[in-house]
Length: 184
Image (tube, rainbow, N blue to C red; front, side, top):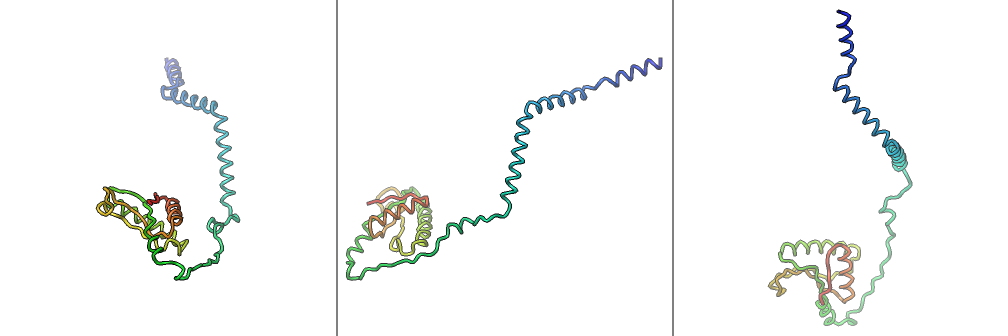
């Protein structure tokens, strides 16, 4: 009898539990999935090795110069031509300063017009830092609806010597990301 009970207990203990069966099934499923995707996994592992090697090569010191050194140009001499005061009439200069006006935008709110005027002033300062004598007579201003006889606040600039100067100014301002158009 003792022998029968021992045999019965050994038979029960050799039978896997429900948790062990589920674990074995999950392990078999993982192995099956790995075998299905083995080629892809190995390819990704090879790419990772290649990228590691590439990063090691790129992180080594090299003879690459920083971008600002590549773009640096030697200073060029600037020739300034000035006209004699008798050659230019004052009436022409005064008329031409107000003859060409560019407009940057129309705004319903004065705060937006002022914000745009500040951005334009910053762009103009940058332009004038590169070309100190250019656009020295240009002034940027905002007009309220009462002054502009419209329902909008207008941000404009005037004081251009010629139409070509105002067109060039608009191109430079547009390059800085601001809208600009010649009004007249």
